[in-house]
Amino acid sequence: MKVTVLGATGGIGRAIAHELHTRGHDVATASRSGDPVLDGVPSTAFDVRDRAATIAACAGAEVVVMAAQPPYPDWVAAFPPIVDNVLAAAVAATAKLVFVDNLYMYAPADGPLTEDSPEHATDPKGRLRTQLGRTLLQAHEDGRVRVTIGRFSDYYGPHGTNSGLFMMGISPALAGRRPRGLWNLDQPHTFHFLPDAARGFATLVEDQRADGRAWVLPAAPATTQRDLLDLVSEATGAKRPGVLTHPMIWVGGLFDPMIRESRSVRVQYDRPWVVDASRFEATFGPIEVTPHREAVATTVEWFRAHVPATVPPAGDRGTEVVA
Image (cartoon, rainbow, N blue to C red; front, side, top):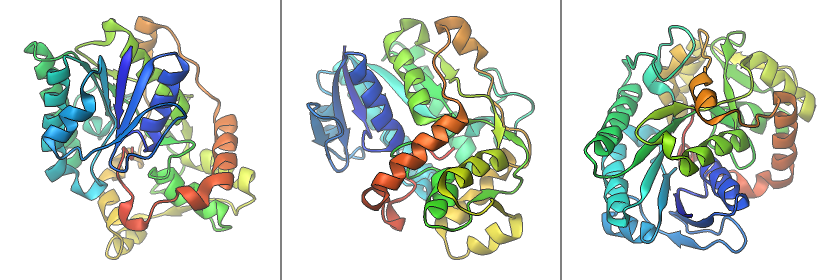
């Protein structure tokens, strides 16, 4: 199957491209930089804000995976026209569109997060995610293009430099500083390991039963920020984890736009945030998920070897799904 992955230099885009290539698909990658992602896999430089360039990047694809996203602070203004461009590209290629999504639309959670959870977000980013999902699924319903959506939670893993866990936990720990979490370290929380999430997205690419719906992707059992950051400390030799409280986040947001933007996701951390992927598993069967201890060790080992070359400039962070 010919698959084009948009945003393939980001953590999840790269993981999806690798998984699809491993499964024997004919993969092409496209990103703003056009940097190579996998040996022997063609890579194209394009600007997803440019409709003609996006259509050209997707030409010949049977499936388009949309993992490209604007900087985190720009989501509300920049995302809708970008999605329109990608829809137009998928239509032009008569390709199936697989959209990489998060769980913001379900916040605040009222029990485990499933495909049937109410999309009742009150913050701008959550409402935006609801809008994008409805736009995409309506395009499928109207017969314009085949669409499926995969939704996953906070992530970590190799190349995942734009995740909150990397920026506040793994990166400081590797530098000998204290890793930190947000608001409440002891609430149960689902974290996706990037290779596990990529296996879920690859299933959505391959299986026609995924079409026309959004799916919550499987992950390792929910843990807490404290327990996960303890694993980070254990793997790096860093201090025990600390917490960024609401006053600290409010003050920090006066100087750092990423911290300022994180204020709106408090409800994802001050109460349980746990996915239930039973519908995915009942439909497609279970996928391999990695225990957190193994996943953290793999992630830390990778960043210890590659972090000087992979950490983006501060102004370039936030260009992919954060939670």
